[in-house]
Length: 275
Image (cartoon, rainbow, N blue to C red; front, side, top):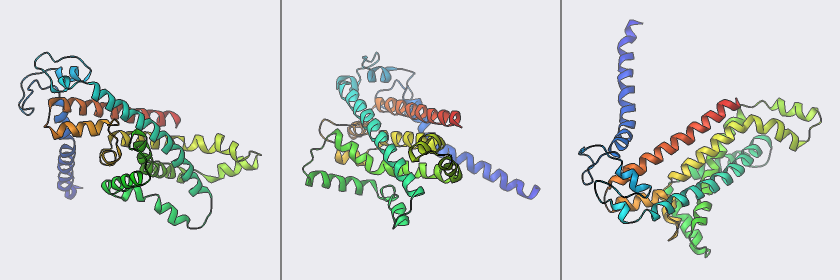
């Protein structure tokens, strides 16, 4: 074991540097969201909650906030649009993704392998390509760009994520349980409701939460298919960045980070309880 001691220490150092490289920028964003310096956010000028106050509609105490002057109404509208799109798109994607996963796993049909591989295409395809394709489709069919086109666009790739998560759960399920249910006189709907769905429910919940978080954070595809009055939170933040990095951006990013952690923790808790 001694000859592996040096390798073990090297791997430990590599692991530390790897996680530091990933999480150090996130930690800096959280820390500097409390920085009182309104001009250079990299120079610490004291602790303040001004940037969080402006986000929630209160004027800053130390300085006149750019976000407050522009009115937080646009920010609230972007948050409302993001939540609406994420809720609708993740719900629809969860239903269709789960149904497709069950159909591919339990039924036999032609080109089944091709269909399974085809479900990976929206994930493999670059976001900018999918965004341009959706924009051309909506414009050519005369559909006005709005919050509804964002919902449709998100469903086109979120279904694939749900499909993959639920398919992995179905692969771990014993088919004999469904066969036993049929032998005991249960019809297809009863077998699905009392046997299949409870067993795959952790995967369904996980896929739905994953789709919700991805929809909340999507920028590239949303940027192409969003209308004038349908700005989502990532697009709103991108618009702020184009005018320069403002202190409020760190606060908004921190709130989004906390929200994502809460959603992910809720999903893990529900999965643990279900097991």
